[in-house]
Amino acid sequence: MHPLTDARAPGWTWRRLPAFISACLGYKPSMRIAVLGDLHLISDADPCIELRRLRTFFSDGLPAMRRLMTWLNTLHLDAVFSVGDVIDWHSEANIILALEVLSQLHCPWHMTPGNHDLQFPTPGAPPGSYQLDPPDTFRPQAIARWRRHGVDLGRRRIGCADGDVLLVDSASSRIGRDSMDWIRKQPRRSILLTHVPLDTPAIRAHIHEREPHRNLEIYTQSGSPEVFASCIRGHIAHVVTGHLHGSGTLVQEGTTFHMIDGSFARGLQPPTVALIEASADQVAVTAIAAPL
Image 1: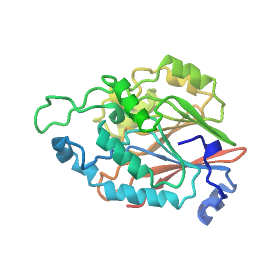
Image 2: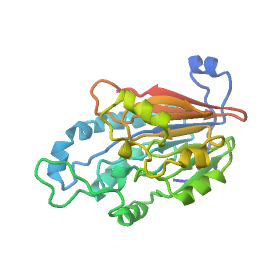
Image 3: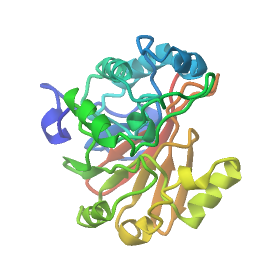
């Protein structure tokens, strides 16, 4: 995986958008990327047989995930990004499966971690229960294992000609003060990708209206409620998040929040993929339903 500026395959050329999208957007972007939500991949080789049995609603979606990669290849993307929860719990087998699935892509891919990417199964959990340790319990060990497989989970900027993509870790429902300082120093046209939705009254109301059962201490960045005021408002125009397993869009004080769902676990309702296209003077983010 390499920055967009270094990653285009030899002979890469821009393919025009499908006619109906081109007519709506009216411009030819120089950057085209897709952002995936929570995939929750589970390997049949993982030794946690009980967890696999409890989570078949995710593992049964593997064939659809492979078809998703094939479909993404038809979009002629510069890169694919994940906002985390690529795997359903942290294990060697699940990581290997995730790398195998994502290797189907014909473009570079990058990810920022979700909580499940860092969470190990809890030893001694009662039979029939799905319990994982908190994401910070073995965070260094989890990040080191991903790194051994060549996957960077750190805070970073992926640059291209007409915009930058910022990847920031919020797997523990917070963003650190150092990351807030870092975001403030980034170009104003940047697009922020992070796992957990920000904690603002508007976002809390948005989530509660659609899913009142959600624990907002977990499903927002409750550990850093100052993020929006500190480094997003007036600086970042687009923020893409996952974690909720539901899609939606919210505009707050000039920032558009795009909440996406990448799971095939919900029966006949397909997940959404955020298609982001940037030209010299504008950025367009379109939610597209992935084919089943």
